[in-house]
Image (cartoon, rainbow, N blue to C red; front, top):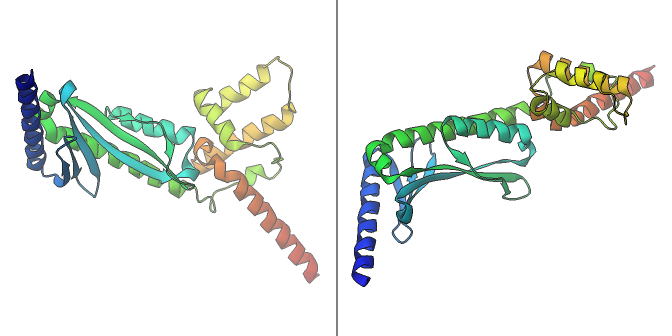
Length: 249
């Protein structure tokens, strides 16, 4: 029994060192190696790093990295888009965890068989790199969208902001009504249940949201969280301008 266990452990170590050798041959930079856990930290390209772990009992390899991004762009649409990118590259993502008050993190990775790695580790690394690059580029794009200083928000001038939730309305349009404001509006018009809101005011909100997305080429499910603050700031600036003009007269 001891002999069999010794042989198995020896064979696992041989496979791990063979994996390290293959990783080096792909051109990846080996940053650190942990012999006990059969894992190594490698740097691929453009400072993208991954943790490679040999799962000896299952004869497979896990490739994983951690991605951290700002909490203020964490919403249902953002996570859905990340999952879509990961699925395209046949990668999996973990649930979100809060790193601190301002940042959220998740894990991106995949498991491949040891035999598949023998045949195409370079291709697996390349696919992993493209996936991580796609996700990080998307997150950078999302951050740039949060600057709403130059978008047209004139369609919201008469909207009561008391119960206005543009992000929630945008998510409902995207995930319930297949991305169509027309379907959303039609559903409201044909709903025969007792209304808990003023119908005309709600329709005005939906039409204003539709116009905003069309004019600015932005999705409220992504930027809606920052929109109300921008509208309030814009109205305050208009009010200040009126008061300045009145005081001059």
